[in-house]
Length: 543
Image (tube, rainbow, N blue to C red):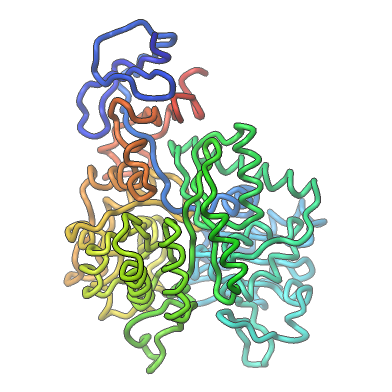
């Protein structure tokens, strides 16, 4: 007897009628003969397909962000003041009011926030607002004073406490080294950000540990509600590994999680060895390891992206790599030899080139392995690197919600910082695909909205910034593939997930609404049912 039979559905791929039988957590038949089933779902013409693979998100940060002030919609000072005041009023006892997802035009076009603007909104209680890309934040004077920055500004490699004309901090903090002391003022001590920087927490109370697990589960339940059954996490440390492992052993993870170990610049050989060993752990239930994560640069909006040419109006300045080439290549060789996948954050084309060099060094040292090393973001790619990326079998892990002008993001200041002469080389989805590069799509949540529907709509409706800029859009079929089969292949799971085929895991979604209408609006579809290994982890049908 089958466990479940879904009938009267339409296949997301082509709209054709489809029925699916499930048994023991796998797809038993597609359009096969009818057999007795313990449960039958009449899909009522809903659209059926493989569940989404979210190929780049931050689970811990996302879970914490669910209980923070979302400022993604704010683009002027008056709205900011109203939102912060309303949020802070019932939270006067908190040591830090924290907002997130703020765009760089938070207080208006052509302006950046500073502590004086924030002081006028919240003068006495520490306030910290984190940028949408998580690479910058703005603190009021109370927050800067609480973490000691008003008394002395430390020298922070790879990070910056921006100073005003008076020589004092102006409130803008760039990169984790400058932001972490403010995060630490929060009740949870900023632990949600520790995996991103590769650091470990100090002593953690049992209450805090329980709260951290709850944040993880909140994030994963949110993923399930969006039709995601594999969350490919992009930050991890030994502490997170403990939490996820305990949840997996208790069978509490509602969906599958792929967890890396983050290797940061400056870590010594002993620490790197410990992280490589942890990354090689065997899977536990729905939890898998097998990957390390590194950062080669920052982002354009803080001038920390590494590029191959000078920044506009900054002659001779191209940004700095976070890893020295020799050290990065050494770590790549060690990780590759251990059979681990490497994922590296690269926003600028200089970072992409440096990382391709490191992956190439690993291939020369260890031979060509089916490693499928990844580059995360690829906001700008020099044309000369495309063939090298394809030749090395590198996966392009990209986010359709990241191009300025998409998903509510403003064009400025990003496109001007990139430079008019480089627009042709930005977010080159179609160019990479046509070269044979494997694409895996995600959102970078909580940097961007988690909804795959929003991301798919953004991918289909992206507008070029000028007539001579190539159209990098993909077809609806290709976009869905990058969110399903492409993501599964990027995580070495193409034999397990990502397609509607017998023998594969029963990770499936039923959609209300026509997915073809996503070309017109992001709310054209919603997820009615999410199955992970045949188990309903989100269900609006039963109610």
